[in-house]
Image (cartoon, rainbow, N blue to C red; front, side):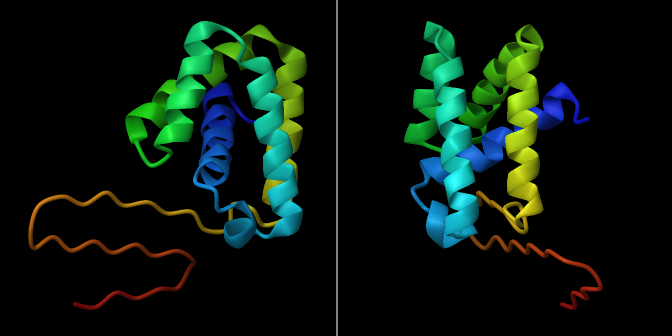
Length: 129
């Protein structure tokens, strides 16, 4: 079984796809429906003012790592407080992963000038410069 932190991070990552409004084009319709179910489950559970605010802030800017971290913290608290929620969340995350929903999700925030960023997924890749 996934640890609390790993589960919260995985859930927040999938919620980021939903918040960016790119569910179907990013992960496909079948996985997208599961991501929406995950979102509905999380939204119903995060009812306290701080948790609601963390979710709303993350929805507004899903690429902001600080907002994602705040949401992960609220998810961790909810997971630790409710074993049923943990089980439900774990099942949803595993269903999404099993259907290929986490195949490749990469984010890079680059600021300044003349910066170069390279991201690679998969195995057996070779990078030459």
